[in-house]
Amino acid sequence: MSAATAPTLHIAAALIEDESGRLLLVRKRDTTAFMQAGGKIEPQESPADALSREVFEELGCRLRHLEPLGEFTALAANEPGHWLCAHLFRVELDGPPRAAAEIAELRWVSPDDAATLPLAPLTRDVVLPRAGVPAA
Image (tube, rainbow, N blue to C red):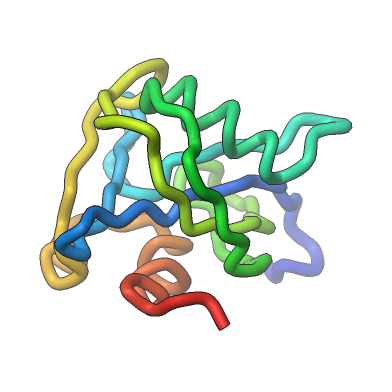
């Protein structure tokens, strides 16, 4: 199924790095793939507002800084037969994240370590190549 014919989910996702360049990845309850914090954009909600809401729900943090990196497509990891239209943002959190809501696990990983984990297509194909690279 191509992106043109498959149902598309509109999401906002956070590229979060610490001072040593490690990425924050999350795994949702009852899933295996690690991915960015974030989630579906509600009707009448901007991508930035959706990300702010999702990060607070999932990690218990507010966004201190938000930098748009672009809009990308990828296969959905947890919704078979769906594609994602993802608004990706590099963000800084206002404090230490903790797993909350549907998040079962969070990990700070180097890009090399991340490649050894089961990753969502968006994380593998879009986020990892941009980690550590400032937005243009």
